[in-house]
Length: 489
Ligand code: NAD
Image 1 (cartoon, rainbow, N blue to C red):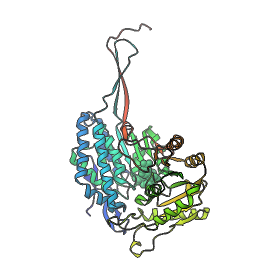
Image 2 (image 1 turned 180 degrees about the horizontal axis):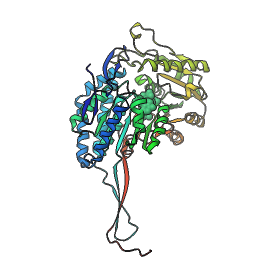
Image 3 (image 1 turned 180 degrees about the vertical axis):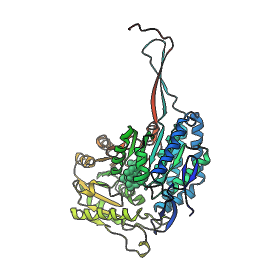
Image 4 (image 1 turned 120 degrees about the horizontal axis):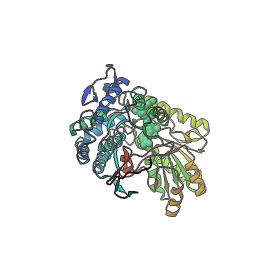
């Protein structure tokens, strides 16, 4: 694959330093592309371009309907190139092409949704406290936005940031994860084709410690929107304090999934598996903490184990594959370490707990789907995100105990409840401290529902109307139609 480039001020450019980075296929460790490795200098050049493009006002003063039309065009181009994008995403992340095709539909849907919202907020008139006054509240773009994304859903996470920022007239600098930049590069080609003016949307490739840190700390950046781990999120929060940037943080999750004995057993088993093992558990909202009513615990675990043993691991390009590899050697080592810790902490391995032995999987970063039982909330494997195919199972006797276990976490991204008693379900979700809660469902999200976390899972919301509000400042304009002297002084 040819050298892919950065996109700064409407030009496709290599890194100022000339450095490059090889992008690795996690299925077989082959180099699939070589991309520029930008650093703080490239980030500064992109910030200057975005600052000038914002300050000249061309994009922010473009009628919102026209901006919406360009965002809609991006959606159409993504739909046109869906198959190419899906295959590229799978090559880069290891996930199945079927999953990636679904992602591309969702991504086009996000651009379409924000294209529609672009011209729907004309502000509001509020009551004037004095006669002959007009008091209105309008929303304006925040300015220059730094956007940093993770490797697990590279283009999906980028779309949640790009679409609302463009629809509201901001300029931006996007930094994708250094290990999965390929679909984001491709979408910048589509952004150019759709007619976004030079300097409005810029793409810088490179590491978090260089490019990301510059975006977070640079005084010309007005907003930083970050999706990634909690440790990085805290660093960004600190760096962003330099100029009191607006901050949107989508951090991790350690999400509880409560299974009551009166739930539909087979569906709950099926969805408990789906809730975790898609993309090998590398999902921020994965239901990795199963909390199961004692009376069905053993039967439930046996059913999970039986199903897990039949999972087909393999290439994302093989139609039979259900689970691909983890993203990298480093990440595989991290997951292995967590499982070792779980064993040391006294949890029981019900299934998995090691790499697969099949000879055809040895070059990839594969790890077997793993389930721990006899887990308690004081264990590291219950409290920390392994971000891999690992479930911990805890038992409960009462509804109160289930909710208490669910809330016993520094995270608050998402959670689920499975029961046929709707009143019980409502009582539980009312007490669950998470940004998204599902009843008899897990991991469903869509463009018009807000997404984000309570507690240390983040600040702010993406998607939905709140997701576009993050990219606006609110201005109150008061006009006196008949000014009179006050005669105080
Ligand atoms: P990460 O925090 O290591 O990296 C995320 C991004 O931040 C990357 O682009 C990285 O280069 C950059 N970065 C790293 N150090 C930086 C620094 N000092 N300054 C600025 N940028 C820096 O996370 P990851 O391993 O790529 O992704 C996995 C994490 O993302 C998990 O914790 C997962 O839960 C979380 N996540 C959350 C959501 C959500 O919606 N809440 C969605 C997807 C992933």
